[in-house]
Image (cartoon, rainbow, N blue to C red; front, side):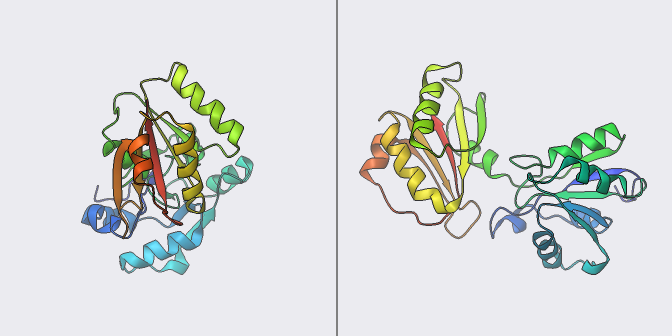
Length: 237
């Protein structure tokens, strides 16, 4: 793809940890990114830092970056997208990982379909898929649930549904904010049956990179304090 094709919408991955970029960065990706002037990002600062780190000679001040996240109104997003010339490519990024996976970027993709734009998902890391891939749990039947429940009653009802419902036998993945890691860990050890398989994918591609699957019983025997560290969780009943 050596020429700038009209109407392309690039789904551009961002690192999920300090070591991500060195693993997936390619000359091809660099050349495509250099073509993009218009961007949709959850956080403009994150995108600017990422592009600056690539050292591709891109003038950051010449980029047109529209900020949109899950709290934004769709009508505002559509207005910004419609303002972009039809012959110009658009880059879409999330805060980390692949756009549209555990991320509100799907609204841009739907707009692209409706407006006959060509979609070009670029290869990159994703914490949900990486955790599942390394969990040893079912990669044939799995569900990503987004963020975990918060209240005790919600936790109990959710776990009971996964155990006894149609979703038993699936791998169940979810995330939580880093400051809730220790609380989430304690809640899972308290409420899950002893034989349940629990995967912790900790700080993926980061300095504390660690992935471990074992029974809740064994986690209890080796319980530790994790601190504010990002974790992707996978449960298997």
